[in-house]
Length: 355
Figure 1 (cartoon, rainbow, N blue to C red):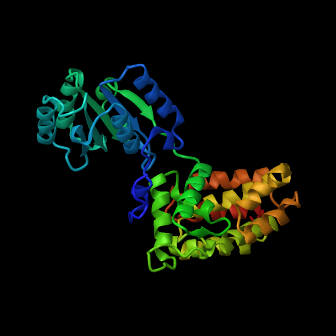
Figure 2 (tube, one colour):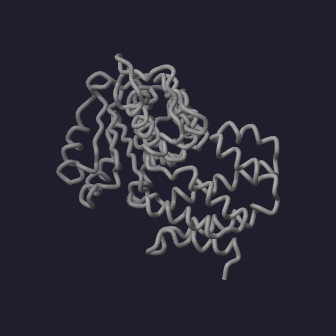
Figure 3 (tube, rainbow, N blue to C red):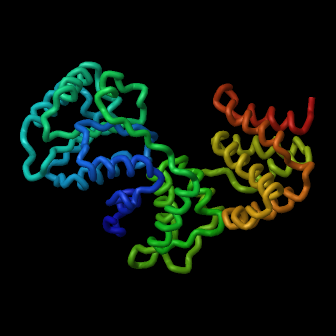
């Protein structure tokens, strides 16, 4: 790992070897296999959402084939997107490596290239010098021309699961000597939305707001509560989510609708509120249907959340699979109306059987 004192966590904890990569096992296995068998392609295309490790793996791959820093070139295609930029790249490609068997060019956000730039790059991809390897990275594969895709080995990067993000958050917090309260790392993982970088960015904000000792490290006995995370990140208060769940369970539409309304008034994303609501409803059904999962769910919940889940899981009439399906449908409708909270409000009314 890089120096842990570095201020930006996602840089300080950026993976340095294939063994440190999380959640991209198939990509790592394929790349390691190609290196071992000496079947290295001249062009790779890494596609996936932000913060999933595309650039990190590109750098690790370059090091694994013994490319030094002097022969590794990283280009941000979002700010170097014109034909003149690609022409300059083509001129550089013709020059032999300084001290490595290959020159590696990493083009990030490659979908941002202009049409003329794509055409210029395509000519180089069609007949690249033997000493050059291109690694193109994009968050929008549909914007990459088919002619380019066909000349690359394409790897799809999947979003890390909530469990993988939670494990990373717990490990980094421990390294940073910051104690996270029960349920806190789960919330941060959820807020990270499948991005290592975003999850670590949230943790960075939280650590920055913690009490620090004179050495700039978190005090060993300090604990970050889930309420502090909610306050610092603008996440919905657990009480609002729980009030909504309670209202749904006892068919008290006013209680549930008031919780949704307060969340909307506070400027909370209805997508996020809905996701937390679904998490809570799912936990209730799982504890009722598979009691062996109770300990796992308890360990990942705050004290108040677990108390509610345990209470409602014992009542089969409170929350059922049809309830969950109704709110899944509502979640899929968020953003399709001018009133963001409307799908959730309609779902509450439907479940509570109000005409």
